[in-house]
Image: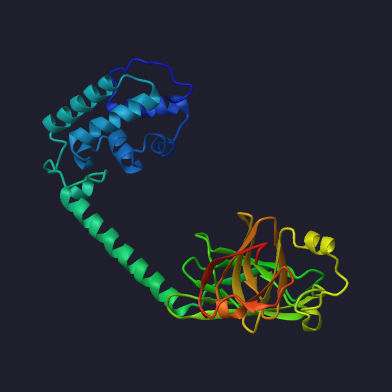
Length: 334
């Protein structure tokens, strides 16, 4: 209800005169009434001017009057009665020079929902969805996949021998680091732990989408890490002079496995006493020590590229198989 109006009685004025007076008392315009009641201004003008022959059917006019009455704070039944009275008077006096117009669809102010309209709307939505999908697929076919490396941000130098490479790409892209497949999460993020060899390491990160479009970024990472003194020193491989039995017994407690990657980057997973201690890619020439109390378990993406040295014994190839070798177990007895 319009603020400032109070419940009032409708006098013997015509409907239009009564409505104009109530609006004037409240100092509101037809546009303000239209905005609050959602009644088009042209219909409000027709009602106030008594041009009933131009209005839509009575069922809509009565709805207009009800909304108008609630806004003005008067009884809508009295406004409806005034409308019916004035309309009949105009007819009886012959002031209605036009025949009463039959309802026309164009005059209905509200959208009428019909089965045909629903069917047409669904068909349009399906067609638009198909066009959008086709447009998106064509765009993706022509586009290269995203590849953003967030860590490291560029070429760098580190003191250790490992670095985390992370970033994001397209959700359905195939991502590799130095030709080793890397898992991509549902949101496109990826992260891989890279073991480096001493010196400069070229890390090639490549993303390929399902249309064969690819993009590659190369990072140069310098590792200042020095190789372990005991790793792969052929001159001292079988020397045992100067060792007493107690020292040898103390050294062989537990298990130590030194892993070296030969000429091709290789994915590696290592467990120590049942706990995962490393999962990532080792660069060609990279060396890493792993220790455990009872056992060390090694899984390699390229068995023939992976060499191990157990408890200081001679280096040996993990397997002759160039493919994946799983769960090779080393104990203190090896």
